[in-house]
Image (cartoon, rainbow, N blue to C red; front, side):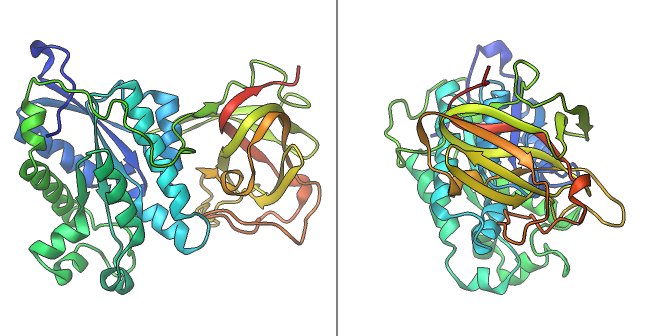
Length: 384
């Protein structure tokens, strides 16, 4: 059985819901709107919902968000949905099953360490592609394996709907131009209803109504010894000597996020010492993104920070991740210097990360890198 946290019987009337996932989970008119409504009705409790989701990133972002916001401590139930993003990133060889597994396990263990009473529900969405329907999805199997190991409720939506109504019905939940997102409002309502019905079937709804309080998975051994449970996030660049000179500071806002960012221009550099592993850069992209150089000790990579989601006709700000350091860099056993800077010239050879493309801005003098923060494992400190 699955049980929610119970502070005391008088406080059972409020169910705190968190959503951690990709673009399907961040849409305000998406499935989560109706999920919130159905849960409120079926549990007869007031509900609140908070979004920690972001489109165009892999599940490592979930672990980052848990470190930043202590999601588990502030939630009774977390819906975790990243399979669409992870699957696509793996298909285009910008992610791997191993990294997806380590990130998922890291998120689970990080949450259960901070609040072992918080219920994590793994939501597995498919895509409207014939290959997906015909072949076994190894990523979905990985999610189900890890979820089962930690005794988590798992909702494999495509599998459930295929058993109940068949493939043609599943296809009707998408439109012809979008294979990754359910139609609104019709498709997302079916998704929400199916999730709640399955939660009711496997006993989760009764547990949400219950005053019983059982911690989960205390002392269970990890599947991956080097999972991302200890991931940390640093963004307080004003508290120390982190730049060659003071960068321009601005704040990005949308309906979910308010992110301070530091704009590096050619000649300026973000620098610090790190003992451990560099995982990712959290950035804001726009039309002036260009090539950047990341160094960690003797390791070096060149990549583009320009996101393919930036609209050329109506330029929009896009917040996203650069996760190449996670797969390309080895960890350091001692403190080693890290430097992150815009390249001063256009280079012919560079690597592209997930949803990144060649810079639109061809003049290196106009390149900017707007950094929100850095994800890492280990110890980080300024040079000074």
